View (cartoon, rainbow, N blue to C red):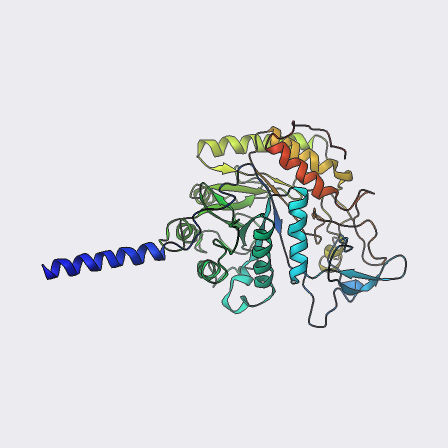
Length: 420
C-alpha cells in the first residue's frame, strides 16, 4: 500500500512538474492568428557608437533614405549637413523613446505589428547583452503599451558555411522565453500566434547567395524543437524563402529538400524585394501569377501563405562603398509616390492573400522603409538619397493602414492608389 501510494504521489508530482514546465507561453494573446493582419519587419539596428555620433563620415554612409526625425525625443548629430547648413541628426534604435514612438505610429496608422529581426550573430550567448536585446526588450514593452502584435524572426544571415548550426537558435529561444518572456510579456499579451500557437519565423532558407547548406545546419531539428519540445515548443513556424521557392529556380537553390522543410512548417513567406519593379512591363501581372500559383501549392499541402510587399528599393550608397564596380542607381525600384506599393498590396489581396508581410518598417539601408522619411536629406557630393516624391513623411504608414482595412474587408478592394 505504501509503495503504491509512493508511486501515486511521485506520479502526480512528475505530472505537476511537467505541466508547470510546459507552461512557458501565455495561453492567450490579443493576436491569436496572423490571418487578417498586416505585419512589417523591424530591423532596429541603427544604434549610436560609443562616441555618441551617428554617421560621422559621409564616405561611410550605407543608407539610402533619411528619416524624418522631427518627432523623436532624442536625436544624435552626424557628420553631414542639411541644405540650410544645420547638422543632420539621426535617431538611436537603442533608445526606449525611439521604439516607443515607432510603436505609437503603428497604432496611430493601423499597422498591426512587426516581426523583430534577430540575426544569427545576435543569438549567440556572448551577444545577448548588446544592443539587439535592448531593442527587443523595449519593443516588447511598447507592443504591450500600444497593443501591437510582435513576433521573433530569426534571420540566418551571418551563419557560416561550416562549424555552425541551429543549436545556437534553440538555446536562444529558451533564453528569450525564460529571460525576456517574449511569449508571455508583462501587461497586455500581444505576441503573435498562429493557429493558436506562438509564431516563430526562420528567415533565409534556400537562397543561393548564402554560404551554408540547408541540409546540414540542423533546420529540421530546430523546427521540430519549436513545434514539439514539451517546455519551449508548441509553436507555429513560418519559413522565409526565395520568391521562386515553388519551382526551385531563379533566386532559389534547386534543392528539393527546401520543400521538405516547408511542409514541416505552418506558413511560407517568400521574399519579394528586388524581384518585381514598376519599370518592367506587366511585372505586376507576373507578381499576381506567382501568388496565385503559390497559394494553390500551399492549399494542396495544407500550409498558409503570406506574400511580401514593399514600397520601393534603393541600394546606391551601400553598393558604392562595397561594390564600387557595380554601383546601383538611387531609387533603382522607384516608389512612384506610393503607386508601386499600392499595386503590390492590392494585387496580393485581390489574388487571395489573407495576410501581408511588409518589407520593412525601418529599413533605410535598402530604401524599403515605410516609417516617416524626408524629402530633405543631408547634402553631400558623395552620398545620395532616395526621397518621398514630394509626399508627406507619413505616406507609407497611412497607405499601410489603408491596406489593413482593405485586407479585412473594412473597405472595398481598390486597385487605384487611394487619396487622403
